[in-house]
Length: 548
Image (cartoon, rainbow, N blue to C red; front, side, top):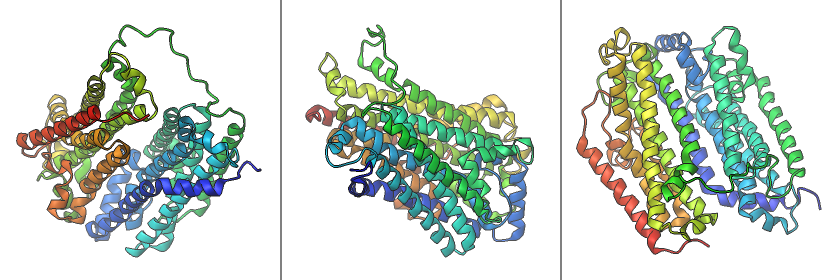
């Protein structure tokens, strides 16, 4: 029997298990790229408007750091600049989740030990996870090529964009395969792989922000930088695609070697042993929950602070970035809901951070299911800790942590927006805040960010209700609710979806702040819905049996 025996059967099983999740990932990423490119055709109809937009981007280091370099002012190049790096980043996340789920997560749960007792080779699970990720990225690349070609973009550039994104995802599939050999837990392996992904983004950002300076070489030190160096619709440098493919092959081979050198259910990096006795601070359910979530919360908050600061730093130049296109200004104002273009931009960014906070809250709520399915909740509940206090401690961290993430985003955006004079001469032309100082800008953006909290908690409440009432569906249902809210929020106004469809998303009912009229009643209703959903989940948990 070879080390790859049984790979065909495992890949069939993996496809069956992930068929819904993969369809959602691929659909959302394809629609993101194609809809952005299509909207650019309508928003920037003249060469002059595209030239003005490109000029405002290439002379602004903050905008280049966010999305990467821009090489010309064609519609395809502008669309690739806008969503190319972000979609490649998301493809990397998709690949990480796929590979870790079918390698380290199955091994941690004991499923690979059961499968390995049959006629299955040692590397079959690793090969099936990598092959499934490769298939998903290949389908994503093909659909991006087909979609961009259908809307009239050049076929060569469409193919280059699709392949750049797909090969980047393939590269991070190999990285996650190596991470699965290092850590003894799926959570640790995902953490390692995501840290590499974030580092790649930061390196790409530094190289792009350097412009034509000496730091431009950093674009060649990052897989996300390689995506920009393919230059879709701006020369199509096909030779660059050999870098992510070669890196994927080398790292995947390294992962196979590492897999052969470790024991089953063990990682090459041993876990750090804890103290013999627990600290006195760990004497209740809330303290234990905080201990489990504090590191993740710190990471989410730090990311929100940095990204909020980056987005706030370009608020004062949003008018010049949009150029002279009246249609794009109308579209941004429709998204933000205000006449002031700077406030409309900031309101849109606050909505995006609301989705980020909802993602954090959903991950905290679903941690209850991972604790239960991993049989770690039962020993806790066998003590003096009751189900009610255990569940409420998790929900409290979800609420408080979401507020911290939103507060960090609002603080970062307010500080940089105020320091760069958002609302001064630059923003005043766009109808912005009108000379607000740092203190008032922080206060208004902090309030705008926290206004997203009730909507974020409604999404988390859906996951909590499913956990209590339909626990085996809570993971798929919780993330689907978040994905649906994100698609409606980000694409609903652009695609002109019917209002009743847009009303499905709780974020559609949040006041468009800053700048727009407040609506305490809408926020109160959202908060009541979130409380009702959370209560339904807690009551359902009290009435059902735990998973054994």
